[in-house]
Image (tube, rainbow, N blue to C red; front, side, top):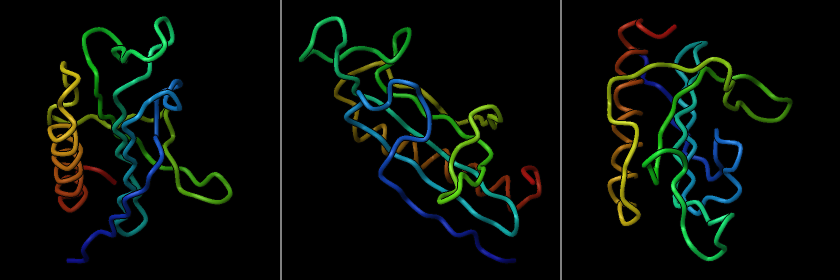
Amino acid sequence: MKEPTITYRGWAGHFILSQMCKFRLNTLIELNNTRVIVSTVGLMNGSLKPGELETISGNRYFETMAFDAKFDGKYWDADVSREIEFDSNWSLPEIDMENEANEMHQNVIDEIVSKMKSGDIK
């Protein structure tokens, strides 16, 4: 079986305020003609209190989402209207969880790759 191509990229793949986030991961996973983006954002600079970190939403400082990819003219990027569900943890509630956020992102990549190989994501 063909192995997927995994490309780690340094920009956010989702979240309208991602430019305010210090933590941004964007990974493109390609297998045959299927492309998926896994995006993690976190550590958002405060808009209400500049210099302080705020939650992204609710009680989370980091979140991970996955989307079908679309070609935007230069890159394959997230089609945020086409979210992909996964079972792995997707949010973290503490500011000092950058290592855990990296692990969370990688766990989602591993799950998506497994689903792509099994044909659950086409």
